[in-house]
Length: 562
Figure 1 (tube, rainbow, N blue to C red):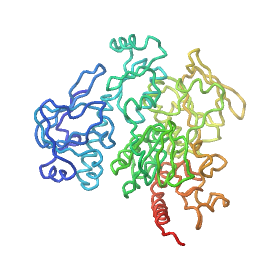
Figure 2 (figure 1 turned 30 degrees about the vertical axis):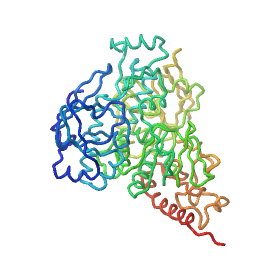
Figure 3 (figure 1 turned 45 degrees about the horizontal axis):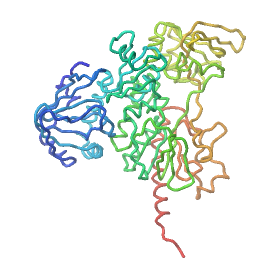
Figure 4 (figure 1 turned 90 degrees about the vertical axis):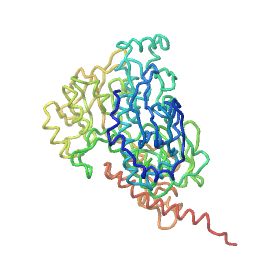
């Protein structure tokens, strides 16, 4: 990563003496001696440092632990990165070049700065986002993945880190001698690849996403002994919208997601029909902004962290994690969304991550450069993926089970697809068989015309699936009412026989059959499966949360009549 120009005013805005004086009320005066470390990669930083005098050198570590300079900050600069908003480990090293006098604003006070000083807060937030982007582009501060670039487990971990906006580097031992030496020393058995070399020196052998997240300190659970006002399960557009509006209105909020923020929307390469973005915006950028925005207002993000069960038989409600840990909340918002369906083909799972993909990011796109691919699906997500992948693939076979695209895809996408010579649309068609190598790499696909019965087989190595949604509601069985397809019933759709538990006129429009439990977005029965609708429900549920919490508090505080 080249050194960054400290004169970049958006990334390194200078604070005036008067502005620093205004910020002093949020922090405390600190002095550091020449050479003293301020931040250490892999360790939780104390917070944001506003330099009043002296110089601080920001550096990153290369895969061998050597330090490389990024930028030198001076009086009027603030030393921080997005991780300080959530109290996660630092991605950079910072040390005092000479004696420093500074104001330290601890992580728990940063949201107060953003709210009380909106103009300064906006400048700081913009700078933090730009600094994170520069680290992601350079892979600075994150783990180093060592293994063949196209190996399934390398791609798996790359995808996990990319979806969480976490920097990383990949070193192929066939091309890098230092990487080859580490493989010889730590992973002589190829099944142990990739190695994940973490910033603090820990080396993991072919880790799971959860193990890698723990080693990087991505997940913090500090709320074991507290009861949150609202716990949100799912960090897609609906969950993030709920977090932003609830936290901005003073509720204590915690957000959980088993994989990454963004949900299915994060897979959209370009969204052009969302209000306010006439030139389009990627799902990653849209949800990434919301993710930071929620933290700005004080929402806690516990990602990745998978919820195994909701215990709704007590007040407060209890969320149980897959590892047995617990979190309590007065109200729960179910925003766990939906997942793409899988093809009904017996050997499909053999090729998942080895040619079968449910996500179309630059990582997967690189693997199919100048090759034929098959993309299955007729909705907007499929259309957006096709338009993104056309810049990489030589040929795209767009397989649609129905008679046309117009049933579920926006017209602007349909027009673009038919105007693209490298995309061929196959309607009334379904994939019926997959073929692969002994190493379980996809090598061929057969599809059938559902009208004529004619079958076609092509030597295709990459299959992308965007074929409708199944609700992520398995963790709710026995707690809330679900419809026949597993979506959460709310409001008028809650069966009459289950409304007695709610009392009054029945559940609010976004309230489930269980008091204090609400549902928004794709997981909700009858919802419109669109990003705009999900965000609207996430914002709308906050008023219902206030009403429920106020009524619940009144019930708890009401005097006992004798």
